Length: 332
Image (cartoon, rainbow, N blue to C red):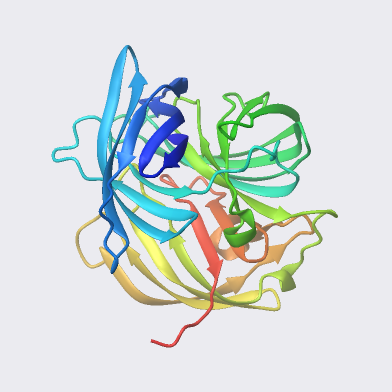
């Protein structure tokens, strides 16, 4: 789900939401309601609430817990027992103001989903996409999307796609961008964390993801030196539940890297966990922010502070979204 809501003294008003349940997109949903509980822990920033949105001739309702980071940012998770209607684990950011009419600059995108139409019909196949594009007031140009769907890696280019933004909901609808154009909800925190928007797919894979700012103004001019120093590494959710997860730390210097990773595999036996693994290799970064980790067979896109990656080999039967974030050490 991607959505825009208005919080008026704890009351959720004027919601706009897009759902994709089992590969069936809802289109824009409006007319729901809800509330943030008035009791918020002063020590943890935790509160609870409810949210209801019309869907399919009825309604979808869920209770949730939330944790406040600051006035523009909070995390949300469903707290229904059992989860009868919807499971939500999300981040809520301040939405773009009504004066924001679209995107403007160069951007990175990432989205993941589950393809149940392939050979692995029981669990489905992970589908992971990353990309770069340029955006102006009403259009997206020069987009390239790199996708690994259950081990099938492809790259596709989209020279032009148009979009329209509803200023009251920050909802951006796109035409002619991928076979099933996603829906985008713009944020107002891009200067804080580079997150320009959240994305909900209209495709059968029930995709979802985010868009990051790459650069504004002049065209990108990156190189291997743009990726330098320590980066914390992790993988996104393994939706198919087959590939496991990875975390670690990389140090990039002059087009090379060393690091340490911890790997959890969905298997039994001696390789179910691989702790404290030493790694090394090289990295290439092109002027547009695309590149490769050749030894790992990974395609990357970057804005310097964040690196997004996806396996570019058919050996990755269940690909994962790889994420590196520039590291700032803090004393414990």
